[in-house]
Length: 283
Image (cartoon, rainbow, N blue to C red):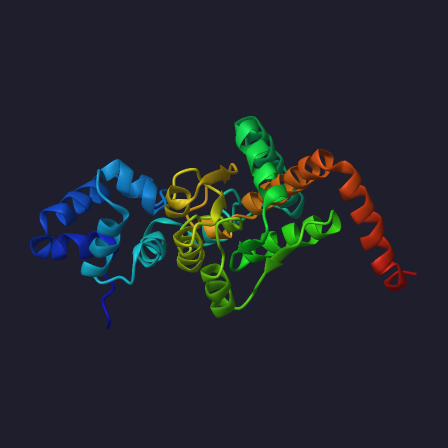
């Protein structure tokens, strides 16, 4: 019979082989185990008093691929199976209860996001987009859907935006951005390796960078010129947060509306042109 050890057991077994910094991380995790699983990598690093890279090295040293791999395995031992889909739901919830909980969660996240928005940052975001020579949005998975939604809405008002699904194309295009261009990284967790790499590429060449994330403290937020975060429901796997995606879609709608009214005649004419261009596709 194969014996599976919990993450806590593994940490304790590997303790003697850890560096002083890694022992500091280990002690903090063992003392705050349940709470730690709600942190993204930057939040954990800040609470422990170490760098994001130290967290990654620690996780690899105890046998995991990285912090996300550690969290996935840790969650197996503390979360009931039904909580892995959505922590607000219970196994015996009725269909009506599930609908009510999901809708109320979405409404709550939208209200919290609106309350926490920094209007000055949003205004600057609109100005930067209006004045950019080229705009590319980067994302993967559900965040790519948010990027595509932004593409669709911005093109309607005459703002030429690019979104590439292929990871290599994202990386290549990010490396060609320059001083008057804008790179927008969308990531619910703010920890997506590819998006972070794309923003780093863009910044290296002088492009302005904007992060749209589900948490204000994240690796992506740290490297971006502007960081806009939405509220979120508590979910160990932030990248799977449905409510966060809805809040980000609403955020995109608001930014597009601000851009349209800042340059109204141009936006109005663009809307008429794009409507006419697609009119034959509708009955």
